[in-house]
Image 1 (cartoon, one colour):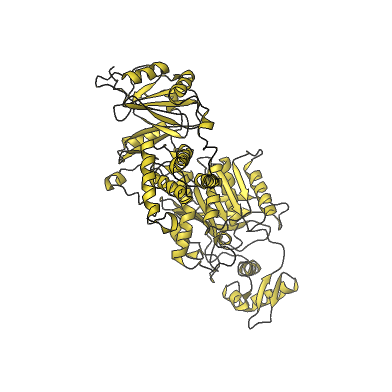
Image 2 (cartoon, rainbow, N blue to C red):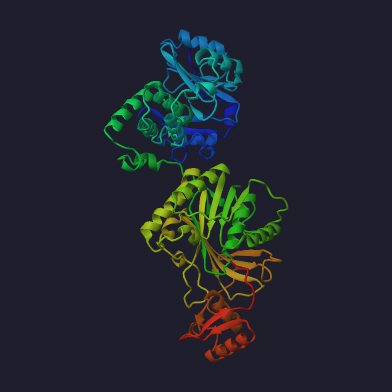
Length: 625
């Protein structure tokens, strides 16, 4: 039979977002994302559309071809016949028998040119994919957690995918036995207690995935089995169980026996995996410079000119600058695809996870209600936004693993921890916030979760203590601690631009930017209503610095003296009289008189027990974060 040269992908497959790419690496077909990172065939965030995958392939970024991922949710199964063609292009006898069982459906030539892949609708009776030798070739069948390399080189017609349930049942019965697959995968009933314990440990080992040190993980499983004193058929049975449930793709019997022999040599020589191993599991994933320069730039904004998808984000500001409220506005905006601060368009909806351990659940709830009201959100969508007040410790690997599981479970596209200083260290651990090399390693592991799952990882962080300049524009240098400015790839910084008005409209600098080239300066006006969380509102407006409506908030701001004094004291608790005088709120004698009046009105307290008087605001509950 002659193969057809025109590309003819089934339209129904093109319409699904289940496409990846692959590279030929030492004979292994390793799955890749369009961004050049390796892909997981069990993580939908790593998959893309047919059009994007095709463009990435055409860009000559080192990819070998397209791939289509089978899932438990779709209705498709794949049947792969290896080495099934004669030199004439016809099916070999054993392959023709299987092809006749399958009947007319879409099929295409494999990348090697020697095999044929069939697409059918139906479910394979086995719990996992199966492969076995037939004649001088092999047949492999699966319907989920695997992918087909796709050539678009059809092997005859039709180009449509037909129902194949009868064929799947017949192939399973004829080539893989009639025993129930679940029973077939069970370990022997007379296995020892050691084998029971071993099986539990082996099933908790990392998956053996091609392209992710899959060979090493299979070898580790073999070694651990031998360390339990289990050998022979009993040991091989456990390896096969691991292979069936933890390998992707499953290893051949030849590969399993090869690793089993290698493990014997390692264990007998008292070599060890894990902490004693010389294997680090680290891979530079280097690429040729030519491929790097031709790599597709997949940068895209979540929030126009404000937040880029997948780039590490810091939201920073001093005390009493509405950081948490602004963060919650951003979270709600992304979860419901409404304008951030009523000004910046959200371009793509993403599920959101907010972890906040400082403001308290009632305050968060009231603020979110006010934000929803300001945006006209009258009905909440279950599954779009998640909240936790249980703070992880991001220096602990097990906490990061739990965070990654939850991000993957809920398909989170934007995750933020508020504030980072609470999540940095466990109880009793030494303060390492000033050690850039330690902080860099901790922050890198937190950010790596987002790199793997295409999730924007954000942190809310504080500024250092203010200087004597009252209302400077915020910069990245204001962030307290080491490593944050180096870690972040984008930032949203907020700082007061005028004296604070309790219960009224307050003005802030809003400065945003990032390594994607976006930057902007804005004036943010916020009114949260009266002090306390009851009756909280969220009335915000934004003016671009480049527009005529931007108010000059320079040195001569014209605020009254009391407002300036209140701003200095609330932003710098326990500040001295001299600090307030240096703040240029007014003539020194007038400022001293105003401080005395404010103390009599019980708006401030003055501690005179030390060498310098210390001032603290006591004039009402504060609702700003």
